[in-house]
Image 1 (tube, rainbow, N blue to C red):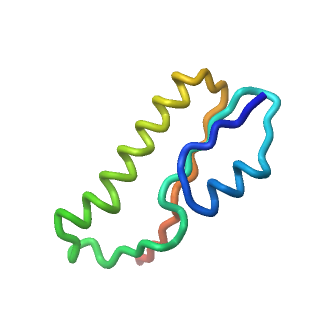
Image 2 (cartoon, rainbow, N blue to C red):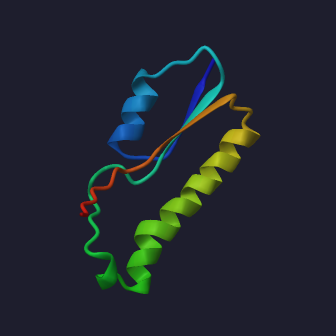
Length: 87
């Protein structure tokens, strides 16, 4: 069976090279390379919000549609982690 990897960067390339599945599967990798940082939310302008939130989400949605159309029986979405603190 095949694993469709949607996305680019080192994480996606590693998955392409090493992951196999016994069912048709898809892995969607978006913006997890650590190259992009985001400051405090109150400092973000519209262009930054579009670049770091809206566009990655649109890529995930398109990836999910592609995975479904490709007949994937299992879908994994890999997203960046966030750090939050509060009290």
